[in-house]
Image 1 (cartoon, one colour):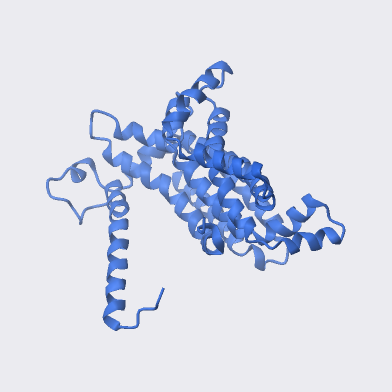
Image 2: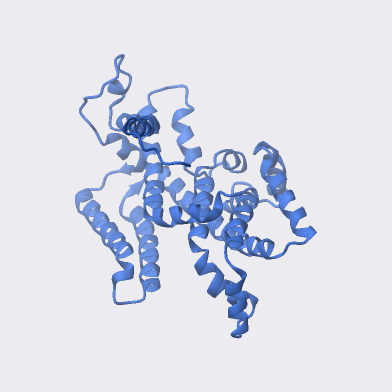
Length: 334
């Protein structure tokens, strides 16, 4: 594509991009504003842009009963989060192994998530949040593990069987989501797995696997075969050369695929709603506020939606560099 040299053309492009950005951000900004309004302000006949904000909606969504020492507990939790986030951001500059730092931070966040309901009487929404984290983490781990091995194999094998597998995976991916609901519901009923996280994880992995295979295969196709051949000449077997040579080179692409898998598992509604009756994830939990006959809980729905969105924004911003590298490395070339 030729570069735009005229000043008017550049201004027009900037105006279009800015307009599209504003258009994309307005729903989230409006939902964020609604989450800080009272029910009376939210249902004002004229939309209120200036109002007295309140945190009551977030408190009603997350906390069932505020303890007497809530300020001290809140400051302690905030301090712990800031320390862990600071360690994550500076892990590579510390004089110790960064893997140890990442492991410590992961254990710290897990311990913090366990300790919060021990200190504060939380609402059921917190349990749904924990369910979402568990389902998402297992879905990403299993999908990426299988997808890396399958994508690498299909990238290096050019026989007829590879073509058949890729076409079958593409056809499976093209099926509407409703086509999977009843078979997995029947399997869950047969194995007594309904309303369990295991059934949700298995279903999400199966639905997402064709996408991860196609995505990762395109990344591994960009990695020269000479790298693994050199490693095997030095004495490494196929698996060792894959783990120690190919995976580090394709790491940005793996991170990009993992982020797309994260979005799919984190935002899944239909499968979770049908396969579970109580062990819901956040999208299904939020629908409790928006599906009632009474509209008085619209501010709670806004607070719940913003609360569910913020972790995803933080993760995307943290891995933004890897995401850009992965997408520019050939994942969108088909």
